[in-house]
Image 1 (cartoon, rainbow, N blue to C red):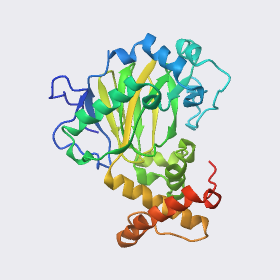
Image 2: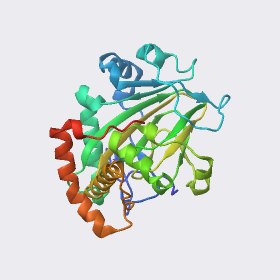
Image 3: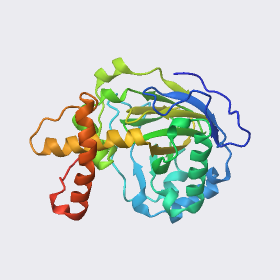
Image 4: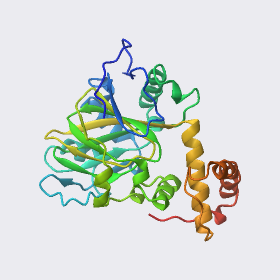
Length: 299
């Protein structure tokens, strides 16, 4: 993984060096100017935790370096804990928190996300003029925390705000095709699970400190190990025209697989992929208007 580069645009939240591409299949590091931003101060984060609907605050049990068994499994979701208290006690009790839809429920985080993408597009031209499915996620986790192996249903930039950690990223092709289809269809990170043989394809691990950012390629699985201090991270994800096309193919493949068919994997037969991309609109319309026909996919 390439080293971090200093932002070239004064005042930008993030600025990638020339040649950076969100079409990259491997991760890379850049710099951000988010550390110290007022939206990431404790008082502001606790205000967000008090106002964000509780169903959008994911809190999970987590292993630490002292209890890690090497399985990198996702911990049990804890639904009977207070988010603010959990945040305040991250230094005492191992925990992992993920905040969903902050950009919808708190306009200031939504504006930060949009400004971030604007600044990024200034130097990363292949984001295009129409990135879609924009979202931002906040992560809080204890020192020495071992974060489960998972993949995201998009490509994203993971920004370190507080604390330091090492992120371990694997090629998207590591994931079995059927698991990837479930991830894309459900957005449930539990669709992707760890296998020891994946280590053979691991990219060079990237150590992150405040002010550093790692690009996570489309659907690339990853896991994290924190250093000694509490970590706060801000992830900005999106889709481009190319990634939307790939997503469409995976969703159509899942539908075909549910009908007992054996579809060709993405990019194995590009001509067929083009047909599947066109089929996706019909599949999406059917699932919207005839919900009883929509496949039930459990993770």
